[in-house]
Length: 133
Image 1 (spheres, helix red, strand yellow):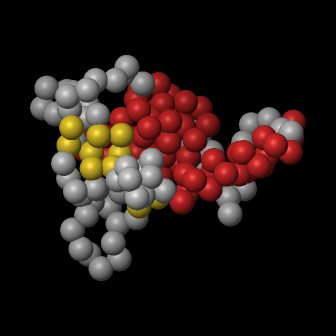
Image 2: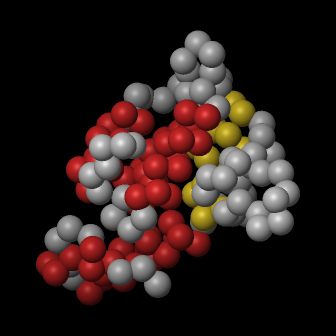
């Protein structure tokens, strides 16, 4: 279990909000897909991916990945950075970021999103500064 006391304002959370925060953080970590241990091919290479649902939404979505980046920055900045790196790994030659990169490798570009990825990196850096990243 992750230390949710790291969240800003935690000491002022109501008991209900503490339970909700704990569920949210457990969901982030529970939806983490790790590279296989046996060197089997993995679409995200050596990056750890957070998927919206391991059963029904097996991929990294642009919008979701952005918010996963921010939330995960409180607990593990490398996992947070991996969400950004995955989207950049699959960026189109024209600069467009994918809407989704499925665990099968299929990548969808037909939907665009507001440009929130740079904002997420800024938020992540404020939470867990990393000048190299």
